Length: 333
Image (cartoon, rainbow, N blue to C red; front, side):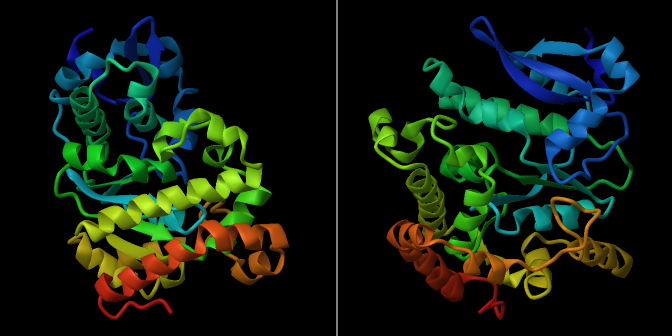
């Protein structure tokens, strides 16, 4: 298939076929990524008649040629996070204005970042190149107003920051985090895949596979969260990125965050973003309801003990660094 045929299409999945990686393309047309998560937009586009009739698959090594066939928007900013801490709120606020392309936890990125676990022959050089090509195709303009590109990564992608920064040097990034007891209560209520043993490779956290069998489900989740926060602190202390505490969202941090990403929006656009902040980020049909106190009140003694053992210290280190090196005047408590 000629590269000119890819207008309106976007990579929605990367999968293994024999020893090679393949790209599955879905028809997006002029549709924007405005849903809370990438996969929700993908679910809509795969039901489009054009997608059903003319579905495309290509080898991943063709992505470079395909990507270069159309101009794209260079990355403006990256969002890393602890999970359940306000990162979706940020991405939804950004997605509320037509100037922004916002990709929220796109699964194909994860496939590339972890590809070497499935095939040790895949080099970091290949993963860097694939990341650049993949993001380059997502950066194609589908609306005339689009000029900024943001990616909210999955929470465990914080551990891949060196590879991501090598692929996209100089792109400003933030790490969003929250009082750990609130996060661990949220995960205990409804677990994300990353806090379930077996979903991620133990090597990501420096563990031998047998170690996970010795952990309770709750301990495993607490230690995964601690590993994510520890990786963020390491890279922040190296002079990269900025920290954002959930308590700063949205009003107290937003002007400083826009300055950090070198963005200027019209008053109408700013009003749209603040209107988005008043809605539930994961279910925008509902109004946002604060839940911090309720989460703390329902924390069990076991969750409190695990939080104290694995997360309190790293949280305090993040807070200390944020207060010293964070956004000026944006203390968040």
